Length: 116
Length: 112
Image (cartoon, rainbow over all chains, first blue to last red; front, side, top):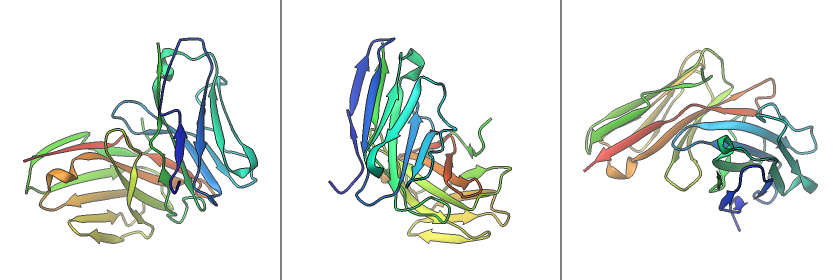
């Protein structure tokens, strides 16, 4: 598709289980972001990939969170041993370059994660 | 405390009225963006401002970037019900300006 694609769109998991969230960025976009958004709130930065550079992982809230980007395209965000406070919408975004000079960033529709 | 503070957090107005949303920080941003988000969707970019003092107009929306590049405002004239949504400001930070930091959002409700 033409936009950023995320899967699954909804995920309900039991506390303690691991989950994987997938992001397919727009073709050719070198920059990829993961954000987390609690209900009706602003976005919390998680991780940023840019080309072959080392990712900026400074936003990951704990070592239970990790992300990979294979071949400079698809990215997977993994949450291990999920906790109820991990419940949120996880948004992926991509752009043709970093945001410094205001490059347009395109967001996916998000993966709604509920930990019960 | 968030790096980007938005105010107000919630705004309810009647159709036809004007509104202003503010985005403030003590940090300097290389660029600042405004997004609008509707329920169940990702944020959609409205505008990017790059130069201190810059003013951009998009139909009924006016965006301003502070001279010091630390703050911004969004003004909507003659609001319509279709303007209802969550408005988010986001600033690019860091030496390479790669980290996009978001404000907490302003939820706008325009009543008919």
